[in-house]
Image (cartoon, rainbow, N blue to C red; front, side, top):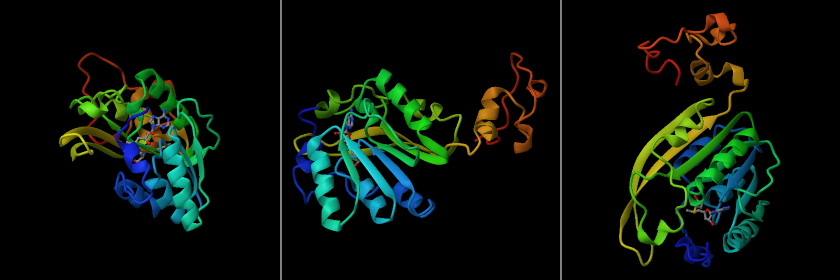
Length: 246
Ligand SMILES: C[S@@+](CC[C@H](N)C(=O)[O-])C[C@H]1O[C@@H](n2cnc3c(N)ncnc32)[C@H](O)[C@@H]1O
């Protein structure tokens, strides 16, 4: 890494490098069982990890930068929060869990495509049935600014993130841009994909899974039907009505 723009903020205990907790984390906190387990991969200085620890979650936070983990640990100590914070490369990290919630906010595009492909599989596998993944990535719809170009090793293609979660229940899927400014770089715009997805309590009952597997989806009870219930795949067959498997 070396000279990423966020390192300036990590060296300052009073800086809020990425602002407060993200909106979907705030929304989620009230829906999840008190004391649930959270893994924040690429946690930075911990805006989301600290927020969830304050809410009573049991949080593990991982970042490759020592400065990030030092700052997060100090802030957690000041508040008496017991966050397990570790310096590690998220791609090499040996996940335990399974976790109720796994977050990767603004990080996966910072590693090569082949590495995030493997990592997303691991994140999904280490989530409890009924648990949540929250993933936010930059896409290549807009080029990254000069000071981030060398860091964005694996920009996603538009929609690619969503396709990785088609076998889960997608609770929020958002494609957007936002304006940003780092010290020493001109104002610029990022293109972003965000997903909040829930692992099916029983994967066989996921509606998106049923659609992908070719089952006719009229109601959840049709999902375990035998292969004879499969929708015939003919050229020109119309897809199921929009919304029937989302
Ligand atoms: C844009 S910051 C986002 C930080 C935090 N997730 C947030 O939303 O505030 C990206 C973070 O990913 C971390 N990161 C990049 N590559 C990583 C890797 N291979 N393993 C762990 N963390 C990594 C960086 O050190 C940085 O703290």
